[in-house]
Image 1 (cartoon, rainbow, N blue to C red):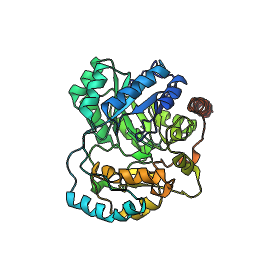
Image 2: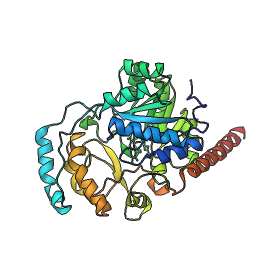
Image 3: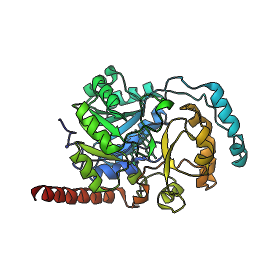
Image 4: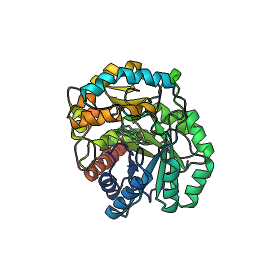
Length: 357
Ligand SMILES: Cc1cc2nc3c(=O)[nH]c(=O)nc-3n(C[C@H](O)[C@H](O)[C@H](O)COP(=O)(O)O)c2cc1C
């Protein structure tokens, strides 16, 4: 198997792109400076907002980094179901003294404009979430000198990623915090997500391109485990969400280890697509009947989530988190990379000593 280019990042540790203001340039710079791969999240930003962040990041580090894009979403939502959900959320709007958002606020996330920026001003790495880009897009990025990755949540999706010509695939286990990068949101498959160790092994046997493992990884020992299972690197979100430089709301960071939040769930409550979050009041009350309608529901609930954050009410916020959230460590991101790398080295030594016995 070919591997990820280690001249890009000496430690096999990728900081997950985290949209919603978490993966800010300061976080990505600290990770890349420490020898991991820092990532910016272009999701929900304008093309110019993305470009400004890239410029800011380039001012903070000369090390390689990545930028993540969301694929445009098909018009599959049932407007009537979105209307019913809006009706059910009316009380939330009254409570937080705000309006509901317009569900028709766009479904392509400025994809073409962002791609144009990334082709005019190439960056070292680009990853994609929520689908597979066309071969011509991946080819154009490669010609621009950019290394490409695409998320997959099943072996079948990983094969589609390889067929399209991506350089590597991100195998995202069901443990992962935030949105599952499933290529097509099919409600009938809810509850059938695959655990990371099993997924890495399946993807590894299905494709020849390098595999980056994501989902629930909080310690270097777990990175050693996914590398032993055939991954070339690990991508960590929740672990970096807690880092000093992360742009996550202070309440979100605190909630990761608070005894108030004992478990996570995959929910459509906030965005209309399955995403893993700490179980809070909003998720409990609205998750059970939220429709499969992304990004309609994302747009609908945006003002509610913003108002809840402004009011300091974590029970109304989207507290994205992976299953390992309780193991989060509030450290400077560079130090977190060093600690993870040291744990990884120790685990590898222990593994090889075990193998020698
Ligand atoms: C707050 C948050 C936001 C996320 N946003 C994105 C995103 O914009 N693009 C993306 O590809 N993945 C996103 N993810 C998913 C991560 O890429 C990754 O799969 C996940 O964080 C791995 O699981 P972990 O959080 O348990 O480490 C997000 C995850 C979190 C926690």
